Image (tube, rainbow, N blue to C red; front, side, top):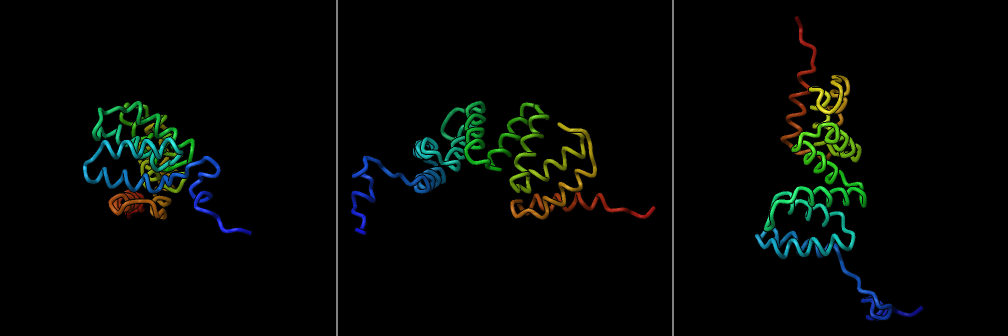
Length: 178
């Protein structure tokens, strides 16, 4: 067995070019942090074209938030949906739910929070609990809300603020003496 040549490693022998999408992501992330949104967008676009779910999500956010571009929620939605189809990303599902919430489509919002929660996203579990408690996008169901709050607290994918909010909501379920 022979050692691989530099042509093999870089793909010249096979007429292919290997591009590291993780490197593109890091370049784009650094550019975004520095406020260089054109480089960020171009690098995220390149990574997205190569199938990087993470690049797709960040590119979607650029259009959602209008970072160096006009705000384009429709384009952001399409990119988040593509990220979902490619990688079943909880982040993509959660962001899709938020976009539906912004336009008042509560049924679709609920379904996307449910998808995000099924990936282990504790933030989505908290949002589901709120939906179940208030009957938003789904029939009110306090037992389902309670289960969602408990799942949110077990999830490693929840911020400290959201965890605190879930604990406060869970305390409201405690039986109080009359």
